[in-house]
Image 1 (cartoon, rainbow, N blue to C red):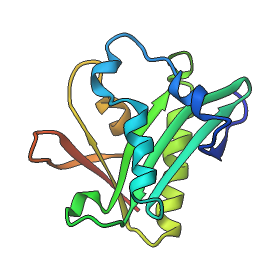
Image 2 (image 1 turned 90 degrees about the vertical axis):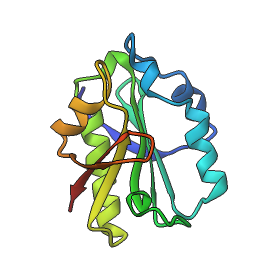
Image 3 (image 1 turned 180 degrees about the vertical axis):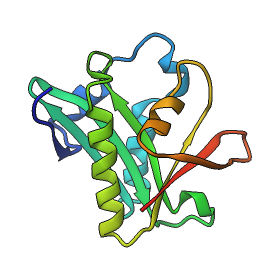
Image 4 (image 1 turned 135 degrees about the horizontal axis):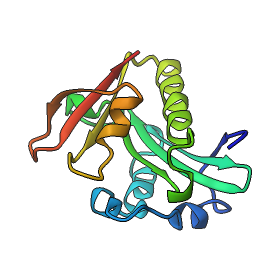
Length: 150
């Protein structure tokens, strides 16, 4: 993969984002993209959604929120979703997207970013560890809360 860039989620990119493919078994760790997109409607000022564009079009999607109207500490600066097309996984797309997210968090004055995930074989845990997230707790549902300090 040569050059990657980020663009805002738009009418031109949403269909391609919804059609990103997964590797077998990954679907159990991912809510439908429409759930994440709905967050923009609920609280557009705190939601950050970007599409990763590669040489041949859309290769990934990342969604996060900052601040907003939450009283739950681990949701104040949180990565909600990262999808990388199955054919483009392990090619730097996810790392590129997370790096951009961390830059956005810094620019908004945050000193950390959290992520919430379900542990399990074939899940995102290894990726989150590789890019620097460290487990710091769990949700009331038993999901892992991991964090990168900025």
